[in-house]
Image (cartoon, rainbow over all chains, first blue to last red; front, side, top):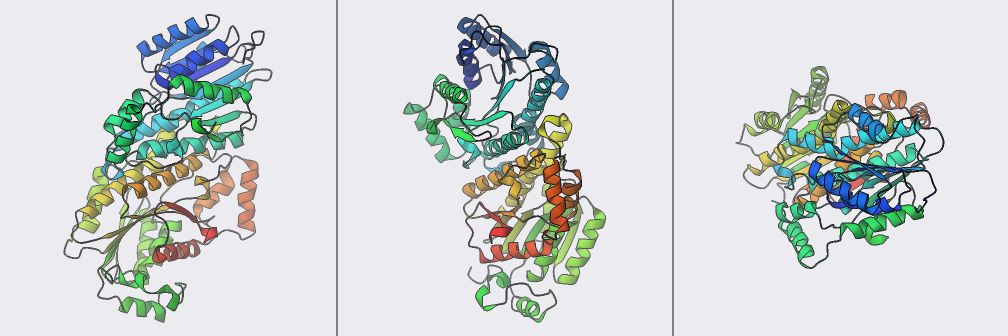
Amino acid sequence: MSDSGGAPWWVVVTGASQGFGAAICTELAPLLPPGSRMLGLARSQQGLATTAAAVTKANPAITFSPVVMDLATAKAMDYEATLKDHLGTGQSTPPGQALLFHNAGSLGTVKYLREMDDATRLSTYFDLNISSVILLNAAFMRLISTLSGKVIVKVINVSSLCALEPFKSWGLYCTGKAGRDMLFKVLAVEDPGVRVLNYAPGPLDTGMQVHARTMTQDDDIRKTFTSMKEEGKLLSCQSSVKKLLQFLEKDEFKSGDHVDFFEV
Amino acid sequence: MGSERGGIIELDTDSLPSPQYPADSHAARILKMSDSGGAPWWVVVTGASQGFGAAICTELAPLLPPGSRILGLARSQQGLATTAAAVTKANSAVTFSPVVMDLSTATTQDFEATLKKYLGADQSTPPSQAIIFHNAGSLGALKYLGEMDDPTYLSSYFNLNIGSVILLNAAFMRLISTLPGKVTIKVIHVSSLCAVEPFKSWGLYCTGKAGRDMLFRVLAAEYPDIRVLNYAPGPLDTNMQVKARTLTRDEELRKLMSSMKEEGKLVPCDASVKKLLQIIQKDEFKSGEHIDFFEV
């Protein structure tokens, strides 16, 4: 990745205001060629500002654009306009690499499936965790397709063990993650020129994890998460991002594969 | 508890011909008569107006104890009427309730009211088994993922193919939990090979099916007393298949679908339903498992 003479890169990170998304931004920044552009999408302006400061400190030679956006309600044209404004257009000098990290997501209501009764909530859940990913990815790929020259494109889905294994009272999250893994498998077969990775980061020490260990309805699962915290078994976002970036750099994975932090 | 698990389906399948018998056959009449004392079953089938859903209704009807109720949900009144007539012909001792409903916009209140009205209202004869077949679904726009640009469309797609399944299943389970006595619950998800393998220009359908398979695996983990099955029926000769072979954007895949039709490789709905009913009858599957027509 250390390619200081190379063409700048374009990077998009959703959920860039905290947790794993923020860590992607700050860990990746120093590895990017000068003039690279990083676009961070999230709902929290304050969180994005924190990330922006950290990125600039890590590499003042790149541009970080914080854009406040609610992915659950954004339209295709919102994505198109944002990408155009902060990355470029078909007229721009093409980047050497274009990376998109689909990181934003939510646990959703962590209750047993028999208790689900709110159609609007479910709709919003899948709007955010599945549909927004489809829309943003499509807008991103359409932009890339207008560029002249060869651009290496890498699309990373922040996945989870929950994409593979069922967890009691995590029906929404497991369903969304399993659906997303498949979504990216389809992307991989449709676009063989794009490098697609489903990366399960391991149990991270984040705000989402707090939610997991306090709100999970199932006692067994909740206790598992609580003890992981107490026993210091949660991973720092930095360590998981570092592994992801190493893996991406090696570039040996089969496009569409699901890879877990613990197996790399 | 022993013999009251639905009667007909509990008979030793080794000593009987496999249920390939016509509905009006001697075998069927014997089976029906031998369970005339059994408690009724409740059955819910979504997408009951045509295709696989209609076939579930008509194939299952003759196997049900008298007084059983089948609730068929779909958008097409005409289709439901056709199914209703076929079910009544197959077993006049079973009640079929056709209810027109758009699952993509139905609320929990809609589901609760419908279930209560057509199943739950008469509490004098509680069922011994309650089976729900989550069959309704749509292919969605068969375009490449790079062409997707309509959030309203996507929202509707997942409301139907994932959201409605969660809501209806929850309402169904809540209703059954209010009944006296032990009710065996079986939840059947009509899955697909697409839940397991990616298909070009079928991004929506694959995503929905993969998500649904996992949904039902979580259901199985949460409720060990329920029997949950993800059944992939094989490539069926239905209207959905017509769409598949005419509208699929990916040329290679579209041609594959066309040749399946031309070479007579599509599976008739009743053949696939028969296999499904045998699997359910044998009751040996692991709850939450994915089983494909071709591997049975």
